[in-house]
Image (tube, rainbow, N blue to C red; front, top):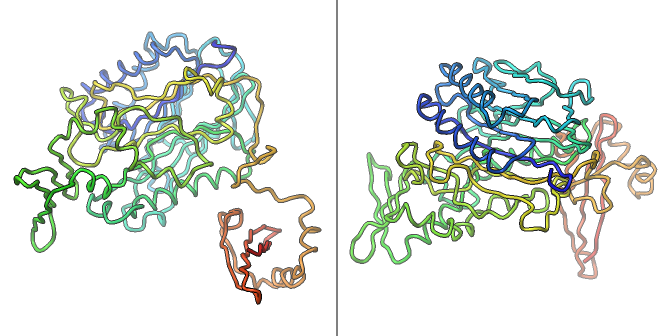
Length: 482
């Protein structure tokens, strides 16, 4: 192993479309995936899949079994003697079904491999090969949740959520989280504003997930979050860039706009935009030249998580939406603005686990099958070496804890008594007059700011945080005169 680090390969793959033509696509997909393993030579492989079974998941059980068997029986994975597979396949359970699949392959050279039991709150040794499929609600070596309906009240309750596992590999503890966020349903709505209503829904779901992990009963550990985030570019900004010096024409159908067309001064059609159509006259060139780096300016959804999530530089083409025709593996469908939907993200503490991170050769971040048909999503991978014997790094225990970290000090009641209005607040708390707050509000330390002008013309900014005490919550105020 390189420099005593553990070579890991983290892969996210939305595999829904390969189950539309399984007789052809399963073989093509697995061959490309396995050739990547052969080239990168990892010792720990994590494959996070979304939309396992595709749209017709009721009839895809056999195809999913074939998919797993193709991987497990491959020559490339022959020396990976420890395997754990988690497949959420119970489509009859609307409140739980996510169609997520986490597959882990551990090389025989790795001896110290433990998996966390979320019920017993302890690590257990990993030996042999286990597949958990169908209804996996009772499996305790994973944590799974579907996003609440209120996150997308305007939509049908879709298969979106997360699936988490916790590992101890060679003395280093970390979480691996598979996630699938909401898509853009209409180009017209997506272009109305940025962030779009879809972007805001994704942000809310991701914030909810990160807050949940940070504030639950389990110890905080470094995590790698990789899945289909469905992050999209600023649609209006991209359209403006591509349609400079053009005239817009609106096509209507039954009184509503069905398409927008943009023509240049010679009346050549440059761009056609519909609810599910995005067709540019140089569609197969403009998004792949220089790996589409000009488009990165409009890739902004991750900005809201700056300091909380880290990503290595993207130097590959947008991972979605590719043609599903086996003869057009490098072409984009003319349906959406191409975007980097599929990502591998790290918590600040997970970044600390990457060996020689300042070295340009420390990692490789890219897509699998750039010229091969892999379905509408190209799998995205991160190859890196993880340090060993790091134990369990808790972000809240660091000398420079991230700003979102907040731990209630053991003497917080004593500290509260030093506040001028503590007695008033305490009486309100005991009498039940304080409004109830959600767990997210209680533990969020970036709460409301209030400002008032004092008699000297200065502005006093009041910031407060909520602390949960027994069954009540207390606001702690901090005022700053500016």
